[in-house]
Image 1 (tube, rainbow, N blue to C red):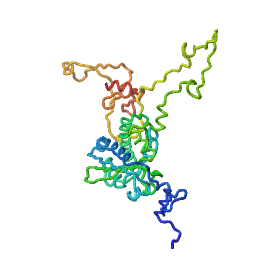
Image 2: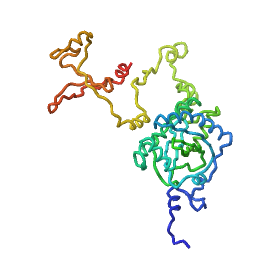
Image 3: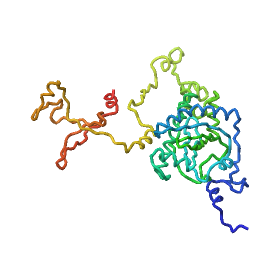
Length: 372
C-alpha cells in the first residue's frame, strides 16, 4: 500500500506534464503525447534523404570548429511520440531548443546524452574532466547553431524558401522527463557522431509535427507553408481588386468621361524607395560565435608615420640622423591591429609612459577598403 509519497519518476513526469501511470485522458495527463504522427514511409524517406545530403557539410564545419577530425553519419529518421522516444534516452540529457520562427515555423530541438555533451565541450575547450557548467552549455549551443545554420542554408537552396530562420539555440542539462518535447507526434533524426576518440556518440534531432509536415511538403515540391506564402504574396494593388472590387473615386470631366489623371497621367501616392544599409550588420549567430575567440591575442601597433628611403640612404643612417615622416605635427596617429588600420588617436603621456587616446574609430567600409 502506498504511503502517499511520490516517487522521483512520478515527480519528473508531473514536471513534464505527462501521466507516468499511463492512464491518460485528463488535462496534462499526456493523452496527446500518445498520438502518432500521420507521416508515411515516403515522407520519412524524403526528410531522411534531405538530411543525409547535409551530413558531409556538417562534418566539415564541426571539424573546423573543433580543430579535430569530426564525422557525422546517418541520420535515421523515424516517426514517434513522447512516451516511445523517452524510452530511448538516458536519464539525463542536454536539450537544445532551436525552434524555427519563420519559413517552416514550429518546434525544433537537439538532444544529447551527458557523456556526448561533455565530450564535445571538452574537445572544443581543450580541457579534460569538464563539467557541464554555463560555459559548456554555451559551447554546445554554438555547435547546434552551426548545425542549424547549415540545414537552413540547404533548405533554402532546396525549396527556394528564403524566409527560414530559427531562435538562437539554448542548451540545458535536465532529466529526460523534463526535456521540452512536442506534445503530439513528431519525427526524430538519429545521427552517429565520431569525435576521433574511437567512440560513437548519438545526437537526436526533433522536428515537431508542423515543421516536419511543412518541410516534407516543400521538399516534394508542394506549396509553401502559410507563413512563407503570405510573405511572398503579391502586393496590394489598391482598391481595384481587393475588398470586393471597390472602384477608386474618379472625378468626372466635361462630357461625362471619368478623369483618368490619377491612373494614366501624373502618378499618385508616390513614396520614396528605402534601400537597405550597405554597412554589414552582425547576425545573432555571428555575435554568438565571436565568444569562441575572445581570449585570442592580437598584435596592436601605434604608427607615428611612414616614409620611403633608398637603400643607400638607409645604409648611411647613424646616431643623430633625423628621419622625416609623412605626418604633420599634431596630426592623429594610426592604431593598427595585425597591421590593419582600425582607429586613430592622439599621443598622451601617462606616468612617464607614452599612451594613445582613441579619437576616431575607422568605419567598416574604410577597413574593407584598406584590406583590399
